[in-house]
Length: 290
Image (cartoon, rainbow, N blue to C red):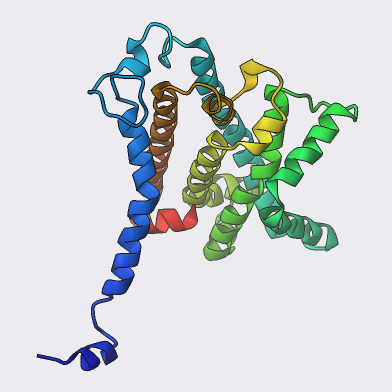
C-alpha cells in the first residue's frame, strides 16, 4: 500500500480534486435550473413549497397559465420569433463576411476583422444604448420594436458566425476549391458545390449558438422594445418577478429551456450528418466549434 506522500507525488494519480470541483460546479449551476423546472409543475401558487404535481401553470389554469395568459403567450412567441428571424439573417451575413475577409487583402478587411474581434469584448450595454440613440434621435430605418430588436441582435451577434466559419476555413484550406476549379467548376460553383458543404458543420454550430444567445438576451431587446407586445421572455420575467410572480414564470422559462435544448439537439444531429465519415465528429467537437 502506497503512502500518502508517494500517492501525492504520483503524476498519474486519479484527479479526485478536479473531479470534486467539476461535480460541485455542475451541481451549483444546474440546481437552480432544476428547482425552477420542478416548481413549474407545482399545483399551488407557492414557489418554495411543493404542493403536488400539476400542469396548471402550462395550460390548466384558465387565467394565469402560459397558454391562457395572453401576455406570457405573446412573450414566448415573440422570443422564438426573434430567435428565428435574427438567426436567419445573421448566419448568411456572417458566412458571406467570413468568406470575404478570408479572400480580401488590404487595410479595409484588416479593419473589418479588427472590428469583429473588438465586438467580442464590447459591452452589450454600450451597444444597446448606442442603438437606442440611433433609433430615437437619428433618422434611420432602425425603429423601436421588432425591427429594431432584430437589427440590434444581428449587429451584436454577427461576429460569432464570422469567427467560427473563419476558423473552419483555416482548417479546410484552398486545396479543395482549387481542385474543383481545375476540374472545370466556376469560382462561384466551387464555393457553392464544394466549400459551403464543407462549411456546413461550422454554419450549423453558429446557428445554434446565435439562436440560443438571442432567446435569452435581455439588454438589447429591453432597450429596443417598443410596447408590451415586443417584450420577450427575459424582459417579461424581469418586469413580473418584482410584482406578484407565480409559478407560471417558471413554466415560461422552462419552455424557453426546452427550445434551447431542441436547438442544440437539432444542431448536433445536423453536425453529425454533415460530418459523417469524418473522425472525431463528437459532441465535444461540436461544442468546441460552437
